[in-house]
Each structure stands twice: as C-alpha cells, then as structure tokens.
Image 1 (cartoon, rainbow, N blue to C red):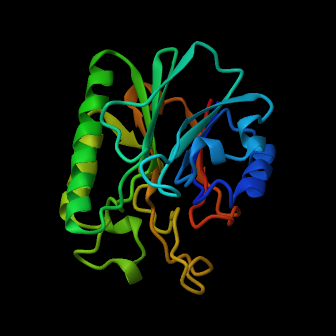
Image 2 (image 1 turned 120 degrees about the vertical axis):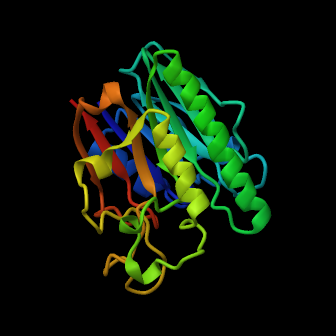
Image 3 (image 1 turned 90 degrees about the vertical axis):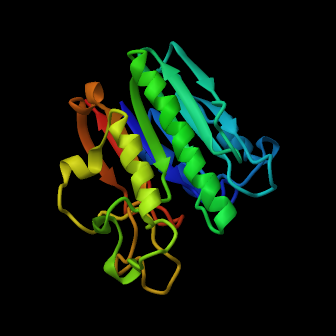
Length: 251
C-alpha cells in the first residue's frame, strides 16, 4: 500500500499537476491539505478520478482558505470516513479501514496570538482523539502538514529563528505529546541525525534550489505499523506546490 500526503496549495491551481502526479505514482491513499476550495469548486476531473473515491472537508469557514481531502483507491474496502469533533477550519479528515485509522491533518499555522492558541488547542484535542483510538486497539497513521519543525534538525539554520511561529517550545512540546501518545515519526526514526529532509520551502528566490526549507509534512505511525514500512521519501522532483509530496510505502 502506498500512502501519500501533499499540501497542494490550491486544488484548482494544481489540477493538472495533481492528475499527472497521481498518474505517475498511483497512490492507494492521497491525503491533501490546503485545497482552498469548496466542494462545489473542486475540479470535476478530480471528483471523478477513475479508480478512486473521494472525501472532502472542503473550505466552508472562509472562501479559498484551508480545506483537506482524501482520495482512496477502490481496492481499499471496509472503509468509512469521518470529520472528527475536534476539527476546526476544515483541517481534518479521518479514514477508518479495517483495523487501521488514518488521520489527515492540516495543523493551523498559528500566526497571531489568538490563532496560536487555536493551534495549541487543536494539537491537544487531536492528541486526545488519537489516544482514544490507540486505547481501543486500533493502529493509527497521522499524516499531513504539522506546521511545526519538531527539532532544529528539521529547519535550515538560515531560518532557525528563536520565537518564530513553527519553532516555539510550546509547539514542539505539542508534537512531543502527540508522539508520546504512542506514535513514531517514521522519517526521523529511519534517518536519525540527517538534516535537509525538507518538505516545504519559502518562495524566496533560490530557496528551493539551495534546500533552505523546513520538514513539516510528516508521517507518525503506531508501533504495530512501523515494522511494515518499506520506504518513506520526499518527492522533491514535484515542484508545482511550495510543499513536496511525502510518500509512504507499506510492504
């Protein structure tokens, strides 16, 4: 099974690139963030993509803001979708498939003190939800745009500015708590101490070419799934969005 997460930064702007990427990679599950569209504005080519069914928590709070979605292969049966109670601003989708639950998330960035508080509360409530899933015996995948560089290793030194949003101790502690619920950061487990595994780059001239980025798009897996991971990589060749897709292959 191949599972991918991708902040596409506008599904209408990325319509052609998204179709081409799916055609090349054939993911079994694709989790998309920042679709920036209501469900009535999602391109029909995506809604009717052959071999997939879709589920959307589309932009409704504010036009052209946030929004997440799932594309799930018809090969995956015994599945159901959910928008959990803790969701805010159309940021969360959940897929229950067999004994596994996948939580797709687009964590608030947290600019401004009021939205920063929203971000920390979102992390707290998501962690409580996942703790409940794990306590019930389910295996869990949490994936998406976490909007936090968890450690200094996850951000280029040129942008590692103390106090900047995405780098604050409270945010990093929130990720610590999420992982402590019973999850493992698979990329960091497989590549301890390796810098430069970035998934997002600012639009500054040359930032992407020089790999001046952040690792904020992640896969967190429960212990029963970690041993099934065959590969996890960042598709740095796909440059249509400011985020790269991250692809997990379970073998």
